[in-house]
Length: 252
Image (cartoon, rainbow, N blue to C red; front, side, top):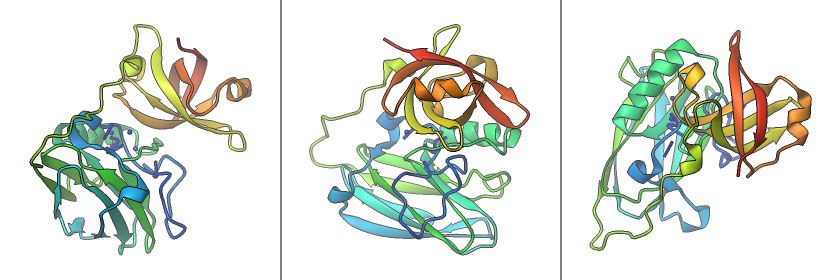
């Protein structure tokens, strides 16, 4: 899920510490797609005002499950997995988290890589650095299959600042998919594993909402045509449990 469902059902995050065990992008290393204008944006580590530690357990609970922050504050969430199975923390709106939970039920092996999420192996620790730019509530949840439905959810309450922030993130129009091809931005090119990470808009033929995913490629030559930061149009299909880019081109 966007907060880059997905919670960014997406990367982990690229901001994980050495102790972090993030499963190759797809473990929602960092999250599902999310609406940054609604939940905030990826934070700058140099601007972190404080650290909040969140424990994830096999009781399907976060501790704490309620966090209070100030509008504009950048928080480092240190996420510990004290359980014996894989867990994750994904920031997002309630609607996004529910949508991505349904996507995960249908595609439990799909790979994600969003800044608003982190997937952590048993006994390991990861982190998400996030700036909460709007007053209100930001939800978080574990979207590993079955965990959300078991009640593994929480909420961040964002207290309003005296002066509203004027730097609200604008919706990226390049992520709106045209009729025939999806639009996206290249986040990572993995030559060794022949994979490509794309922050994308809706992929209509896959019934896939906007998020950041790790794809396989139909043709290895695709990997040499793009690099991180490139805007692209692409087509993709599902092959077994894998999602495969079947065509890609630069986007104006």
